Length: 477
Ligand SMILES: *Cc1c(COP(=O)(O)O)cnc(C)c1O
Image (tube, rainbow, N blue to C red; front, top):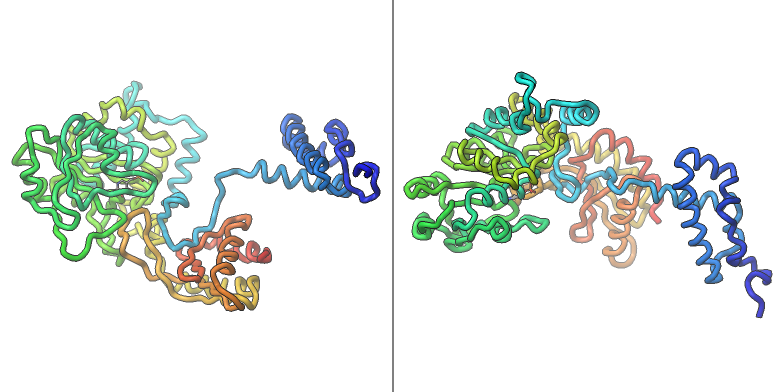
Protein backbone atom coordinates (compact mmCIF):
# COMPACT_ATOMS: atom_id res chain seq x y z
CA UNK A 1 0.00 0.00 0.00
CA UNK A 2 1.29 3.45 -0.83
CA UNK A 3 1.28 6.35 1.62
CA UNK A 4 -0.92 9.34 0.81
CA UNK A 5 2.21 11.32 -0.15
CA UNK A 6 2.97 9.05 -3.04
CA UNK A 7 -0.58 8.39 -4.11
CA UNK A 8 -2.39 10.34 -6.77
CA UNK A 9 -5.59 10.97 -4.74
CA UNK A 10 -4.36 14.46 -3.84
CA UNK A 11 -4.51 14.01 -0.07
CA UNK A 12 -1.91 16.14 1.71
CA UNK A 13 0.54 14.65 4.18
CA UNK A 14 2.34 16.37 7.05
CA UNK A 15 5.36 17.18 4.92
CA UNK A 16 3.16 19.25 2.58
CA UNK A 17 2.21 21.72 5.35
CA UNK A 18 4.07 24.97 4.63
CA UNK A 19 6.51 26.39 7.18
CA UNK A 20 5.51 29.43 9.23
CA UNK A 21 8.55 31.40 8.00
CA UNK A 22 7.53 30.91 4.39
CA UNK A 23 3.96 32.04 5.03
CA UNK A 24 5.19 35.14 6.85
CA UNK A 25 6.66 36.32 3.55
CA UNK A 26 3.31 36.22 1.73
CA UNK A 27 1.67 39.55 0.97
CA UNK A 28 -1.65 38.65 2.65
CA UNK A 29 0.08 37.55 5.85
CA UNK A 30 2.39 40.61 5.84
CA UNK A 31 -0.71 42.79 5.84
CA UNK A 32 -2.05 40.90 8.85
CA UNK A 33 1.26 41.35 10.69
CA UNK A 34 1.00 45.09 10.14
CA UNK A 35 -2.48 45.04 11.63
CA UNK A 36 -1.99 42.69 14.57
CA UNK A 37 1.76 42.43 15.14
CA UNK A 38 4.27 39.65 14.54
CA UNK A 39 3.75 37.78 17.79
CA UNK A 40 0.00 37.27 17.49
CA UNK A 41 0.08 36.33 13.79
CA UNK A 42 2.94 33.83 14.21
CA UNK A 43 1.31 32.21 17.21
CA UNK A 44 -2.06 31.86 15.50
CA UNK A 45 -0.47 30.67 12.23
CA UNK A 46 1.20 27.88 14.22
CA UNK A 47 -2.17 27.01 15.68
CA UNK A 48 -3.86 26.76 12.28
CA UNK A 49 -0.95 24.87 10.70
CA UNK A 50 -1.07 22.42 13.58
CA UNK A 51 -4.78 21.86 12.93
CA UNK A 52 -3.96 21.17 9.29
CA UNK A 53 -1.15 18.81 10.31
CA UNK A 54 -3.54 16.78 12.46
CA UNK A 55 -5.96 16.60 9.56
CA UNK A 56 -3.16 15.50 7.24
CA UNK A 57 -2.02 12.81 9.68
CA UNK A 58 -5.59 11.54 9.75
CA UNK A 59 -5.53 11.39 5.96
CA UNK A 60 -8.34 13.90 5.86
CA UNK A 61 -6.74 16.94 4.24
CA UNK A 62 -7.26 17.42 0.51
CA UNK A 63 -4.24 19.01 -1.16
CA UNK A 64 -6.19 22.01 -2.46
CA UNK A 65 -6.75 23.22 1.11
CA UNK A 66 -3.07 24.17 1.14
CA UNK A 67 -3.28 26.50 -1.85
CA UNK A 68 -2.12 29.98 -0.73
CA UNK A 69 -5.48 31.67 -1.35
CA UNK A 70 -7.48 28.96 0.46
CA UNK A 71 -5.03 28.93 3.34
CA UNK A 72 -5.21 32.70 3.72
CA UNK A 73 -9.00 32.58 3.74
CA UNK A 74 -8.97 29.90 6.45
CA UNK A 75 -6.47 31.89 8.49
CA UNK A 76 -8.52 35.07 8.18
CA UNK A 77 -11.62 33.28 9.41
CA UNK A 78 -9.69 31.81 12.29
CA UNK A 79 -8.35 35.24 13.29
CA UNK A 80 -11.79 36.78 13.10
CA UNK A 81 -13.15 34.12 15.47
CA UNK A 82 -10.12 34.39 17.76
CA UNK A 83 -10.28 38.17 18.01
CA UNK A 84 -14.03 38.52 18.29
CA UNK A 85 -14.88 40.03 21.71
CA UNK A 86 -16.68 37.57 23.96
CA UNK A 87 -19.05 40.25 25.21
CA UNK A 88 -21.20 41.00 22.17
CA UNK A 89 -24.12 43.27 21.38
CA UNK A 90 -27.36 41.40 20.81
CA UNK A 91 -30.92 42.23 19.88
CA UNK A 92 -33.33 41.52 22.71
CA UNK A 93 -36.66 40.39 21.26
CA UNK A 94 -37.53 38.24 24.26
CA UNK A 95 -40.15 40.71 25.42
CA UNK A 96 -38.47 40.92 28.82
CA UNK A 97 -37.29 44.49 29.29
CA UNK A 98 -35.02 43.96 32.31
CA UNK A 99 -33.48 40.66 31.21
CA UNK A 100 -30.81 39.63 33.71
CA UNK A 101 -29.01 37.38 31.21
CA UNK A 102 -28.96 40.15 28.60
CA UNK A 103 -27.58 42.82 30.94
CA UNK A 104 -30.73 44.35 32.48
CA UNK A 105 -31.30 48.11 32.17
CA UNK A 106 -30.10 50.05 29.12
CA UNK A 107 -28.84 53.46 30.08
CA UNK A 108 -29.83 56.88 28.77
CA UNK A 109 -27.32 58.97 26.80
CA UNK A 110 -26.63 61.28 29.73
CA UNK A 111 -25.25 58.32 31.67
CA UNK A 112 -23.24 57.01 28.72
CA UNK A 113 -21.58 60.40 28.16
CA UNK A 114 -20.78 60.67 31.83
CA UNK A 115 -19.11 57.24 31.84
CA UNK A 116 -17.05 58.14 28.77
CA UNK A 117 -15.84 61.31 30.49
CA UNK A 118 -15.01 59.41 33.68
CA UNK A 119 -12.99 56.93 31.62
CA UNK A 120 -10.95 59.61 29.91
CA UNK A 121 -10.36 62.25 32.53
CA UNK A 122 -9.37 62.50 36.21
CA UNK A 123 -12.28 63.32 38.50
CA UNK A 124 -13.03 64.19 42.11
CA UNK A 125 -13.97 60.59 42.93
CA UNK A 126 -12.48 60.86 46.41
CA UNK A 127 -11.34 64.46 46.48
CA UNK A 128 -13.04 67.33 48.22
CA UNK A 129 -12.58 70.20 45.79
CA UNK A 130 -13.64 72.81 48.39
CA UNK A 131 -11.00 71.86 50.97
CA UNK A 132 -8.41 70.13 48.83
CA UNK A 133 -8.59 67.18 51.20
CA UNK A 134 -9.46 63.56 50.68
CA UNK A 135 -13.18 63.01 50.04
CA UNK A 136 -15.63 60.11 50.27
CA UNK A 137 -17.03 58.67 47.03
CA UNK A 138 -20.45 58.26 48.66
CA UNK A 139 -20.64 62.04 49.13
CA UNK A 140 -21.02 62.44 45.37
CA UNK A 141 -24.54 61.04 45.30
CA UNK A 142 -25.72 60.71 48.87
CA UNK A 143 -27.62 64.02 48.85
CA UNK A 144 -29.33 63.16 45.58
CA UNK A 145 -30.42 59.73 46.82
CA UNK A 146 -31.73 61.28 50.03
CA UNK A 147 -33.61 63.94 48.07
CA UNK A 148 -35.35 61.28 45.98
CA UNK A 149 -36.10 58.82 48.78
CA UNK A 150 -36.66 61.02 51.80
CA UNK A 151 -34.03 59.01 53.68
CA UNK A 152 -31.57 60.55 56.16
CA UNK A 153 -28.53 58.85 54.69
CA UNK A 154 -27.47 56.59 51.83
CA UNK A 155 -24.60 54.52 50.50
CA UNK A 156 -23.97 52.50 47.34
CA UNK A 157 -22.38 49.09 46.80
CA UNK A 158 -21.80 46.68 43.92
CA UNK A 159 -25.34 45.25 43.70
CA UNK A 160 -28.39 44.63 45.85
CA UNK A 161 -27.09 41.22 46.92
CA UNK A 162 -24.05 43.01 48.35
CA UNK A 163 -26.34 45.60 49.93
CA UNK A 164 -28.31 42.91 51.77
CA UNK A 165 -25.14 41.09 52.83
CA UNK A 166 -23.57 44.28 54.16
CA UNK A 167 -26.74 45.37 55.91
CA UNK A 168 -27.12 42.00 57.66
CA UNK A 169 -23.40 41.71 58.37
CA UNK A 170 -23.40 45.12 60.04
CA UNK A 171 -26.64 45.01 61.99
CA UNK A 172 -27.32 41.35 62.72
CA UNK A 173 -24.12 39.30 63.11
CA UNK A 174 -24.70 36.74 65.87
CA UNK A 175 -28.25 38.00 66.19
CA UNK A 176 -31.64 36.69 65.13
CA UNK A 177 -33.38 38.09 62.07
CA UNK A 178 -37.11 37.51 61.87
CA UNK A 179 -38.52 36.95 58.36
CA UNK A 180 -41.92 35.72 57.19
CA UNK A 181 -41.91 32.22 55.64
CA UNK A 182 -43.70 33.68 52.63
CA UNK A 183 -40.72 35.95 51.89
CA UNK A 184 -37.75 33.55 51.85
CA UNK A 185 -36.94 34.48 48.27
CA UNK A 186 -34.51 32.88 45.86
CA UNK A 187 -33.46 35.23 43.06
CA UNK A 188 -31.93 33.72 39.91
CA UNK A 189 -28.16 33.29 40.13
CA UNK A 190 -28.21 31.70 43.58
CA UNK A 191 -29.15 34.66 45.76
CA UNK A 192 -31.20 33.11 48.57
CA UNK A 193 -32.25 34.90 51.72
CA UNK A 194 -31.44 31.95 54.06
CA UNK A 195 -27.98 31.50 52.51
CA UNK A 196 -27.02 35.17 52.56
CA UNK A 197 -28.19 35.30 56.16
CA UNK A 198 -25.80 32.47 57.07
CA UNK A 199 -22.91 34.16 55.24
CA UNK A 200 -23.60 37.38 57.13
CA UNK A 201 -23.40 35.47 60.40
CA UNK A 202 -27.04 36.15 61.22
CA UNK A 203 -29.51 33.58 62.46
CA UNK A 204 -32.69 33.32 60.43
CA UNK A 205 -35.89 32.96 62.40
CA UNK A 206 -38.77 32.02 60.10
CA UNK A 207 -42.23 32.98 61.24
CA UNK A 208 -45.76 32.37 59.98
CA UNK A 209 -46.58 30.00 57.14
CA UNK A 210 -45.97 30.14 53.41
CA UNK A 211 -49.28 31.86 52.74
CA UNK A 212 -50.14 33.63 56.00
CA UNK A 213 -48.08 35.57 58.52
CA UNK A 214 -49.64 37.60 61.33
CA UNK A 215 -48.43 40.40 63.57
CA UNK A 216 -48.39 38.03 66.57
CA UNK A 217 -46.01 35.73 64.65
CA UNK A 218 -43.38 38.48 64.64
CA UNK A 219 -44.22 39.62 68.14
CA UNK A 220 -43.93 36.20 69.75
CA UNK A 221 -40.64 35.41 67.96
CA UNK A 222 -38.82 38.37 69.48
CA UNK A 223 -36.16 37.49 72.05
CA UNK A 224 -33.42 39.44 73.79
CA UNK A 225 -31.13 38.44 70.92
CA UNK A 226 -33.31 39.67 68.03
CA UNK A 227 -31.30 41.95 65.76
CA UNK A 228 -33.96 43.03 63.30
CA UNK A 229 -37.31 42.39 61.67
CA UNK A 230 -36.82 42.04 57.96
CA UNK A 231 -39.25 42.27 55.06
CA UNK A 232 -38.27 40.90 51.65
CA UNK A 233 -40.06 41.82 48.43
CA UNK A 234 -41.51 38.75 46.68
CA UNK A 235 -39.78 39.79 43.50
CA UNK A 236 -40.25 36.83 41.23
CA UNK A 237 -43.38 35.13 42.51
CA UNK A 238 -46.76 35.94 43.95
CA UNK A 239 -48.52 34.43 46.90
CA UNK A 240 -52.21 34.43 45.97
CA UNK A 241 -55.41 33.03 47.41
CA UNK A 242 -55.85 32.72 51.17
CA UNK A 243 -52.98 35.00 52.17
CA UNK A 244 -51.99 37.48 54.82
CA UNK A 245 -48.87 39.55 55.20
CA UNK A 246 -48.18 42.11 57.87
CA UNK A 247 -48.06 45.65 56.45
CA UNK A 248 -44.72 47.36 56.91
CA UNK A 249 -46.01 50.07 59.25
CA UNK A 250 -47.34 47.37 61.61
CA UNK A 251 -44.00 45.58 61.57
CA UNK A 252 -42.28 48.88 62.30
CA UNK A 253 -44.63 49.48 65.25
CA UNK A 254 -43.82 46.06 66.69
CA UNK A 255 -40.11 46.65 66.21
CA UNK A 256 -40.22 50.06 67.86
CA UNK A 257 -42.06 48.69 70.89
CA UNK A 258 -39.11 46.35 71.40
CA UNK A 259 -36.37 48.73 70.27
CA UNK A 260 -35.59 46.59 67.21
CA UNK A 261 -34.98 48.04 63.71
CA UNK A 262 -37.09 46.98 60.75
CA UNK A 263 -35.36 46.60 57.38
CA UNK A 264 -36.70 46.00 53.87
CA UNK A 265 -35.06 44.34 50.87
CA UNK A 266 -37.17 45.99 48.17
CA UNK A 267 -35.46 44.18 45.29
CA UNK A 268 -36.35 46.27 42.30
CA UNK A 269 -37.15 49.38 44.26
CA UNK A 270 -38.74 52.07 42.16
CA UNK A 271 -38.38 55.77 42.96
CA UNK A 272 -41.66 56.88 41.38
CA UNK A 273 -45.24 55.67 41.33
CA UNK A 274 -45.38 53.67 38.10
CA UNK A 275 -49.18 53.65 38.07
CA UNK A 276 -49.12 57.15 36.54
CA UNK A 277 -47.90 55.50 33.31
CA UNK A 278 -50.41 52.69 33.49
CA UNK A 279 -47.85 50.28 34.89
CA UNK A 280 -48.57 48.04 37.86
CA UNK A 281 -48.20 49.61 41.28
CA UNK A 282 -45.14 48.95 43.43
CA UNK A 283 -44.27 50.49 46.78
CA UNK A 284 -41.71 53.25 46.16
CA UNK A 285 -38.55 53.62 48.22
CA UNK A 286 -39.93 56.88 49.60
CA UNK A 287 -43.17 55.23 50.75
CA UNK A 288 -41.12 52.48 52.37
CA UNK A 289 -39.06 55.03 54.28
CA UNK A 290 -42.22 56.94 55.19
CA UNK A 291 -43.75 53.73 56.57
CA UNK A 292 -40.87 53.74 59.04
CA UNK A 293 -38.33 51.28 57.62
CA UNK A 294 -34.96 51.87 59.29
CA UNK A 295 -32.93 50.59 56.36
CA UNK A 296 -34.03 49.83 52.77
CA UNK A 297 -31.94 48.13 50.06
CA UNK A 298 -32.66 48.00 46.31
CA UNK A 299 -31.03 47.46 42.91
CA UNK A 300 -29.63 50.10 40.58
CA UNK A 301 -30.25 48.21 37.34
CA UNK A 302 -33.80 46.98 37.73
CA UNK A 303 -36.75 49.40 37.62
CA UNK A 304 -34.47 52.29 38.58
CA UNK A 305 -32.97 51.99 35.09
CA UNK A 306 -29.35 52.64 36.05
CA UNK A 307 -26.09 50.71 36.24
CA UNK A 308 -25.57 47.57 38.33
CA UNK A 309 -25.47 48.78 41.91
CA UNK A 310 -27.04 48.23 45.30
CA UNK A 311 -28.45 51.24 47.12
CA UNK A 312 -28.78 51.28 50.89
CA UNK A 313 -30.82 54.08 52.44
CA UNK A 314 -32.17 54.82 55.88
CA UNK A 315 -31.39 56.02 59.37
CA UNK A 316 -28.19 58.02 59.66
CA UNK A 317 -26.65 56.05 62.55
CA UNK A 318 -27.29 52.72 60.83
CA UNK A 319 -25.96 53.86 57.43
CA UNK A 320 -22.92 55.24 59.26
CA UNK A 321 -22.28 51.83 60.83
CA UNK A 322 -22.71 50.15 57.43
CA UNK A 323 -20.17 52.52 55.87
CA UNK A 324 -17.68 51.71 58.61
CA UNK A 325 -17.96 47.95 58.10
CA UNK A 326 -14.63 46.77 56.59
CA UNK A 327 -16.64 44.73 54.07
CA UNK A 328 -17.89 48.01 52.60
CA UNK A 329 -14.44 48.56 51.10
CA UNK A 330 -14.66 45.20 49.35
CA UNK A 331 -18.18 45.79 48.05
CA UNK A 332 -17.90 49.44 47.04
CA UNK A 333 -18.66 50.66 43.53
CA UNK A 334 -16.17 51.91 40.97
CA UNK A 335 -16.16 55.33 39.40
CA UNK A 336 -17.91 54.11 36.24
CA UNK A 337 -20.89 53.04 38.31
CA UNK A 338 -21.05 56.39 40.08
CA UNK A 339 -20.61 58.22 36.78
CA UNK A 340 -23.60 56.37 35.35
CA UNK A 341 -25.76 56.45 38.47
CA UNK A 342 -25.74 60.19 39.13
CA UNK A 343 -27.21 61.30 35.77
CA UNK A 344 -29.84 58.53 35.95
CA UNK A 345 -30.90 59.61 39.43
CA UNK A 346 -30.89 63.21 38.29
CA UNK A 347 -33.53 62.41 35.65
CA UNK A 348 -35.93 61.62 38.51
CA UNK A 349 -35.91 65.31 39.44
CA UNK A 350 -38.16 65.90 36.43
CA UNK A 351 -40.65 63.07 36.88
CA UNK A 352 -43.05 64.22 34.16
CA UNK A 353 -40.27 63.90 31.56
CA UNK A 354 -39.07 60.54 32.85
CA UNK A 355 -40.97 58.35 30.39
CA UNK A 356 -39.15 60.05 27.49
CA UNK A 357 -35.73 60.28 29.07
CA UNK A 358 -35.24 57.16 31.15
CA UNK A 359 -34.64 54.33 28.68
CA UNK A 360 -36.14 51.60 30.87
CA UNK A 361 -39.34 53.55 31.44
CA UNK A 362 -39.54 54.51 27.76
CA UNK A 363 -39.39 50.83 26.82
CA UNK A 364 -41.92 49.84 29.45
CA UNK A 365 -44.39 52.48 28.24
CA UNK A 366 -43.80 52.18 24.49
CA UNK A 367 -47.01 52.67 22.48
CA UNK A 368 -48.24 49.44 20.94
CA UNK A 369 -48.84 51.23 17.60
CA UNK A 370 -45.14 52.02 17.31
CA UNK A 371 -44.20 48.36 17.71
CA UNK A 372 -46.97 47.36 15.33
CA UNK A 373 -45.48 49.59 12.67
CA UNK A 374 -42.08 47.92 13.09
CA UNK A 375 -43.76 44.51 12.95
CA UNK A 376 -45.54 45.32 9.70
CA UNK A 377 -42.28 46.46 8.17
CA UNK A 378 -40.35 43.36 9.26
CA UNK A 379 -42.99 40.69 8.60
CA UNK A 380 -42.47 40.32 4.79
CA UNK A 381 -38.68 40.33 5.19
CA UNK A 382 -38.64 37.46 7.64
CA UNK A 383 -41.33 35.59 5.71
CA UNK A 384 -39.22 35.79 2.58
CA UNK A 385 -36.09 34.49 4.29
CA UNK A 386 -37.86 31.62 6.03
CA UNK A 387 -39.87 30.52 2.98
CA UNK A 388 -43.15 28.69 2.57
CA UNK A 389 -42.57 26.14 5.36
CA UNK A 390 -43.04 28.89 7.89
CA UNK A 391 -45.76 31.42 8.52
CA UNK A 392 -44.66 34.78 9.89
CA UNK A 393 -47.37 37.00 11.30
CA UNK A 394 -47.38 40.44 12.88
CA UNK A 395 -49.54 40.13 15.98
CA UNK A 396 -50.17 41.48 19.48
CA UNK A 397 -48.36 39.75 22.33
CA UNK A 398 -47.37 40.36 25.93
CA UNK A 399 -44.05 41.58 27.34
CA UNK A 400 -42.71 41.19 30.85
CA UNK A 401 -40.91 43.70 32.98
CA UNK A 402 -38.33 41.18 34.18
CA UNK A 403 -35.66 41.04 36.87
CA UNK A 404 -38.19 40.06 39.42
CA UNK A 405 -40.07 43.31 39.04
CA UNK A 406 -43.81 42.67 39.15
CA UNK A 407 -43.62 39.02 38.14
CA UNK A 408 -47.25 38.42 37.35
CA UNK A 409 -47.94 41.58 35.37
CA UNK A 410 -47.65 41.68 31.60
CA UNK A 411 -47.60 44.57 29.14
CA UNK A 412 -49.55 44.59 25.86
CA UNK A 413 -46.95 44.52 23.12
CA UNK A 414 -46.55 43.76 19.41
CA UNK A 415 -44.20 41.60 17.39
CA UNK A 416 -43.72 38.72 14.98
CA UNK A 417 -44.92 35.18 15.59
CA UNK A 418 -43.22 32.44 13.58
CA UNK A 419 -45.04 29.12 13.16
CA UNK A 420 -44.06 26.03 11.19
CA UNK A 421 -46.57 25.08 8.51
CA UNK A 422 -44.51 22.49 6.59
CA UNK A 423 -44.93 18.74 6.90
CA UNK A 424 -44.02 16.95 10.12
CA UNK A 425 -43.78 18.14 13.67
CA UNK A 426 -43.12 21.81 14.44
CA UNK A 427 -40.71 21.45 17.37
CA UNK A 428 -37.43 21.02 15.50
CA UNK A 429 -38.09 23.44 12.63
CA UNK A 430 -39.00 26.18 15.10
CA UNK A 431 -35.86 25.48 17.09
CA UNK A 432 -33.88 25.77 13.86
CA UNK A 433 -35.18 29.29 13.32
CA UNK A 434 -34.34 30.18 16.91
CA UNK A 435 -30.79 28.84 16.38
CA UNK A 436 -30.41 30.67 13.09
CA UNK A 437 -31.38 33.97 14.71
CA UNK A 438 -28.99 33.29 17.59
CA UNK A 439 -26.18 32.53 15.14
CA UNK A 440 -26.41 35.82 13.21
CA UNK A 441 -23.51 38.32 13.36
CA UNK A 442 -25.66 40.23 15.78
CA UNK A 443 -27.55 37.51 17.67
CA UNK A 444 -31.31 38.02 17.78
CA UNK A 445 -32.94 36.45 20.84
CA UNK A 446 -36.63 35.55 20.83
CA UNK A 447 -38.80 33.27 22.93
CA UNK A 448 -40.42 29.93 22.06
CA UNK A 449 -43.77 29.06 23.57
CA UNK A 450 -45.97 26.16 22.40
CA UNK A 451 -43.99 25.65 19.15
CA UNK A 452 -44.32 29.32 18.23
CA UNK A 453 -41.30 31.61 18.11
CA UNK A 454 -42.21 35.08 19.39
CA UNK A 455 -40.11 38.10 18.47
CA UNK A 456 -41.40 40.86 20.72
CA UNK A 457 -40.40 44.25 19.30
CA UNK A 458 -40.76 46.26 22.53
CA UNK A 459 -36.97 46.56 22.97
CA UNK A 460 -36.11 47.00 19.29
CA UNK A 461 -34.43 50.36 18.78
CA UNK A 462 -34.78 52.23 15.48
CA UNK A 463 -31.06 51.70 14.95
CA UNK A 464 -31.38 47.94 15.30
CA UNK A 465 -34.48 47.98 13.11
CA UNK A 466 -32.37 49.22 10.22
CA UNK A 467 -29.89 46.38 10.78
CA UNK A 468 -32.41 43.57 10.67
CA UNK A 469 -33.03 43.52 6.89
CA UNK A 470 -29.32 42.88 6.28
CA UNK A 471 -29.02 40.35 9.11
CA UNK A 472 -32.09 38.50 7.87
CA UNK A 473 -30.76 38.26 4.34
CA UNK A 474 -28.50 35.44 5.61
CA UNK A 475 -30.33 32.30 4.49
CA UNK A 476 -31.61 29.81 7.03
CA UNK A 477 -29.14 26.91 6.84
C1 LIG B 1 -33.00 41.28 42.50
C2 LIG B 1 -33.09 41.11 43.96
C3 LIG B 1 -31.94 40.95 44.73
C4 LIG B 1 -30.58 40.94 44.12
O1 LIG B 1 -30.29 42.18 43.55
P1 LIG B 1 -29.04 42.32 42.55
O2 LIG B 1 -28.97 43.78 42.28
O3 LIG B 1 -29.34 41.48 41.37
O4 LIG B 1 -27.84 41.81 43.29
C5 LIG B 1 -32.10 40.79 46.09
N1 LIG B 1 -33.30 40.78 46.65
C6 LIG B 1 -34.44 40.91 45.94
C7 LIG B 1 -35.77 40.87 46.65
C8 LIG B 1 -34.38 41.08 44.56
O5 LIG B 1 -35.48 41.22 43.83
